[in-house]
Length: 372
Ligand SMILES: Cc1cc2nc3c(=O)[nH]c(=O)nc-3n(C[C@H](O)[C@H](O)[C@H](O)COP(=O)(O)O)c2cc1C
Image (cartoon, rainbow, N blue to C red; front, side):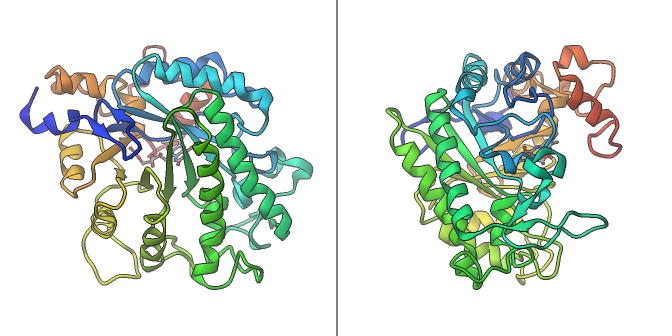
């Protein structure tokens, strides 16, 4: 193996004792391929299995914690005990290949397609639509409904424990419900969940508390991570300065990791800080050794990974590249990095083991994946 890449293969230990065989993580990716009843399909399990032989840890697509949080066609659920066998199938499919399996748990809030939620009624922190033409106006959740959704996150985590997952990742990123509560754009509430930045952190913090309670009931150490997006383009909207406040708070919650969501690991802040370094560098410096950070974003070549690790993050995640090249980790480990493919080959769907709905989304969305 090329000596520059040896750092990827150093074992990683979480504070709770769980060990990863290497520092590469598969980032969560929705695949639009589950059954309409919220159970996973065989195609989907095969797709994960094909990618779970290399990375130390695989984070699944997001799973809804309650029916009014279903954000995608073909999304699987973690909202009822009837779905535990389905979740178990997924966890086992990943773990059999040697990776730790993490279930991403989620509520889509105002971003849910109305046709996927009960009575076509989307819900959010406040009745503020997302920006852009024709966005539905969500209904503001009542205080007691918010409290129920917090419990739903805990219940989904309990099901993940029962299904044999090694952990859960709380999806607080990409503009979905948890972020909608933190954002001054979407949260204009006047109860204990809205107002000052401290109050806007109440919902994410109570979700963490509830999920950690479920994790504590596990017989074996159970990982709890949290994903966040550092900035929003809207005004008002989350700024890098707001995110520094959030991550200071997150770092005190005894989480196992923080996972930033970025399209490009080298991207720089839009506003909020007087700092020209990358968002990833700024976040890693701020968090320090308090909790491990997972970096991500447009990592295709092993050199991209070396550059991302140079920020000091202990773990990095790859999303698109692991669809394009399921053997990314193995090829580096075997000194065959010159065989790594970094553009999607439109003739290799079968070989790449990608379910039709995800494949169709990829090849019909120009500019999303390299090679399309
Ligand atoms: C097909 C696809 C589906 C995604 N679904 C999710 C998701 O369910 N949850 C999430 O947090 N991020 C999701 N993302 C974002 C990725 O986790 C990742 O942050 C982003 O693609 C940047 O990493 P990359 O450059 O390695 O692709 C998705 C990305 C892709 C390409």
